[in-house]
Every structure is written in structure tokens, then in C-alpha cells.
Image (cartoon, rainbow, N blue to C red):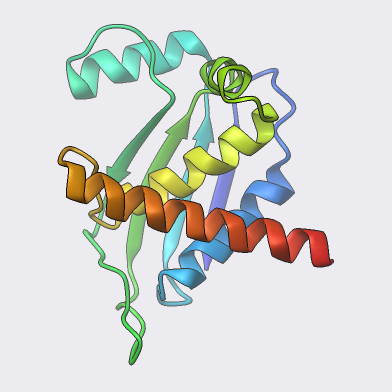
Length: 153
């Protein structure tokens, strides 16, 4: 897997941990080993600009996902075809505020947003209650397994 990470902020993003989580999530979704992903961490001003320009919504947001090859997860019998999964843009300042409300570290919120972004790139959504249940259930499952793996290391 080719995962590129760019931190354009002053925020001390643990890029190694984000990389490990992204690899874990992509593997859990049975993506081809040659699948490409780009993660970009930006400030509030940049996120606001992207949110307005691409979603036509005011103000900043926590995460934006920009799919490329419209890949779908692999199944139990095979992995997905190789390709470019897409780009995920995360705003650490926004994530930090959400983390405070959720009562967990800001870095954990960014890992959650990374997982959330990967699932969006794979076509998952949460507009409808049944979609939300499926997406958030899968998101929690991936994160819980990742944290268990981390604590065992």
C-alpha cells in the first residue's frame, strides 16, 4: 500500500500512528496491496475553503474525503482490485474540539476521522439510519481491533 501523509499544520500529528491505522483499516477492508491513499492535515482556514468549495457548506469541518477510482471493499474470497482510493483531508484543530467533547485524546479523534474517511472513500455513508449503523459499526470495529493490536505490542 502506498500511503502518503502531509501535515500542513503546527499540530504534532503522530504520522507513524496514522500510517499504521490507515494500513490496518485498508487491510481490514481487503484492499489490494497496491492501493494508494493520500492523507492531508490542514488548518481551519484551509478546511473552511475546501468545505465551501467542494461541499458548498459554510465554515470548517472535521474531515473531507475525495474518492478517485471508486474502489469497493474486497470480500472474504478476494481483495479489491488495485487503484487509487483517494484523498482524505483532516483538520486537527476541529478534531481537537470534538475530542474534548467526546472525552478522548485528540490523536484518537484523528484516527477515528482517518477510519471514517477511508470508509467514505469505499462508498459507505451515514445519511440514512441503516447506513449510519453499518458505517459506524464498522468504524468502531476497525478502531477497537487497532487499539487492541496497539496495546498488545
